[in-house]
Length: 69
Image (cartoon, rainbow, N blue to C red; front, side, top):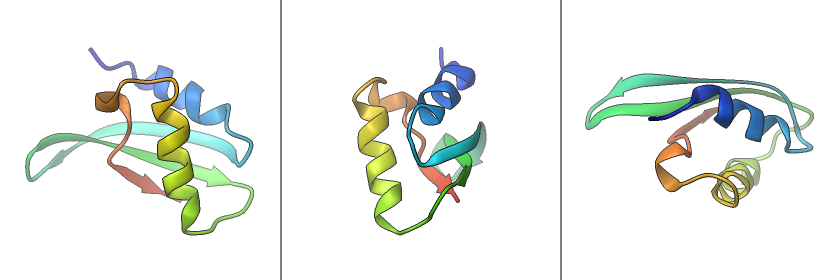
């Protein structure tokens, strides 16, 4: 089972993230996770950095597919 609040809490531990909401959405291959974020500063490498940051604490299936910043 995926706990969306656990993913949100993990995202909020990142220094760049001020606010985070994670939802599940219907994608072409089934349900996918999308993270909506308010951040201090945005640059393209932030998405990759956030994925790597989450993978340190969460299993792959709990890392969102989409990051909307």
